[in-house]
Amino acid sequence: MSVLDNQFEKIQSSQPEKTAGLASLPDRAAAFLVDCGFLVLFISLVTAPFKRNLDYADLNEDVKAYLVNYCWIILLTFCSIIIYQTLMIWLRGGTIGKLIFKIRVVNMWTAQNPKLTEALLRSVSWVFSVIPLGLPFLEIMSNPQRRSLHDRINDTVVVSISNRQGMAPSREERALVHSVYSFFLALVFIACAVEIKSLVTEFSTFNDFFGYLSESDFACEEVTEAQKNWPQASDVKEQRLNIALALYATDAIDEACLDVEARRTFYFKENLVSAYLAKAFSTADDSTLSDGYLHKVCEVDSQSEECELTKIIVLWTEKKWDDAAEVFRKLEKSEKAYVKIWAIKHQEKNKDYSKELATIEGLWPNSVLKGYLGSHATVALWGAHRKDEARQAFLGVYDEIPSDQQESFSRWMCDSELEDACGYKTASCSAFYDAMGSGDVAEDTEDAASVLTYIKSIQCQPDYSKALAQLKLKIEDPNLYLYIQGLQAKEYKKKYEANQIFENLLKEVDADPQFAYEVRRQSLELISRSDELEEITKQWRSEQTRSWYWLRLGQRIFKKYIDLNQHMEAAKVGKELLEIDPYDSVLRRDVVVALFKGGKVDEAKGLADEIRRSIASTDEFDNILMQMKRTQ
Image 1: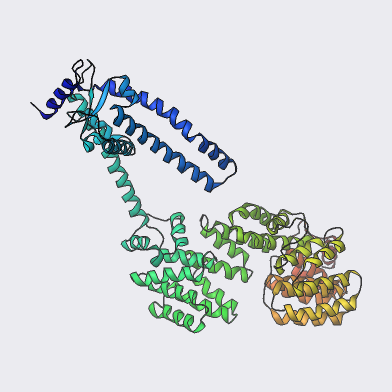
Image 2 (image 1 turned 90 degrees about the vertical axis):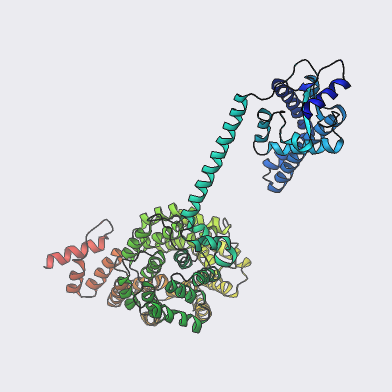
């Protein structure tokens, strides 16, 4: 006779009017459902205040309060189950459901109700059996005494004290349990296989995986995130350092992040030529050290694209833009994103917008670089005088760029619109006002560039003088304050005072291209004699920076010469501008007019032959074109 049979005899002897044996599976299932119903009601009452607080936190978007109340609900749910089962089994030998269906929990060796510690441990074990999807409960259908994990841990068994005696699990029940276990084991195996395959895909080398495990020492987090979304030409992911160099070129990461990736590459002895280039960039503050790394790039591989890039960097420092363009032509077939990004920067600086757009197209689509590429495509389209396309590009990319760059991007676009046609009601200017958080009055008085653009926008609006006076009260920057004072003197026709203010101010802001341009623009508008204009023209010619502001000042000098009927001087300035910006068809027409009026008819004819007539043609240009045709 088995030990379990001996215990059942003890139970019968202690309760002679009843029989005892294993509890049947239907009784246990029914008791479980009754207990669940009771617990749902009880737990709902206990956790009701926290559920109400949870709803309030959700409505108020209070994440901290939401998490605190959610944790309290989980804790109270588990505690309620444990306390309920512990007390009922210790005091009565079973829960309410078990008592209804006349089944009990008893100690196998004493046939008595479990002690308090045993009941507590059984209840805790029962709760933990729920966590792995309740799989441990299936042992009720496979264990000979229908004892699940929580019963075997505490030496307890569930018995019946009614005439409905349970049987040991049948072969079919055991087979079903084994099938369920096999199914879940297969799911775990498949999940592990998928995860391993994902790791193999994500980390093409052991070094990548090791770098991932040692994130703080061997990898920059921004590069790790970018690598997940970086486009792949094959199953092999782009090298981390190439991505880091591309992100650095777009100002998405700083020198410290790039330095981490460079050190990682040195540690694993991978792609040393790129590592030296990265170190040259990350140590840019120390020119001697940075130059040393640049020399090492070509020492490692003099035929590499990285070596060609170091030559370009040297040419940039010497301002040899055309020579740098020649080197970039050798790199046109490069597939490396960071090489193309530096090419975009050079092409934009060199006003080669058609090539810039082609280079951007070669990098598209790239979700990581989408904001950068879109913003530069906007600039290139505007520079190529495809302004409607530029406006559409701005609208398409504005939300894609980082929020900390939106103000500068919208400011540039708004400033360009204002320069072009005083378009303060454009989408870009609206975005600029929103990014400043200002509405009708500029609040970001610490940012000179934003304030200068804001001032330019209110010059186009009614009540300009009033708005300028209000803004002056908020300004703390002495140069901005002086600039507004000069604008007010100009507005009140105090030409001498305004000129003196702008002349003194220019000495302070000459290093700031935008500020210097705005001051010169205001001075230019006050000029009424050709000798005064010649002085500004000399200064303009001596700079030759090819920047946006240099071009803008040249265009205004050209128009000022036209206003003063100095057509030949205007034509000279216009031709200089066309060498840098050959896309400007409107300027080309105006130069034809200036040449014709200055008596250079043959030269005007030659330039006019290069122009295709369009809706941009002016009446004056059309009239001159007709006159030149009649003289042929």
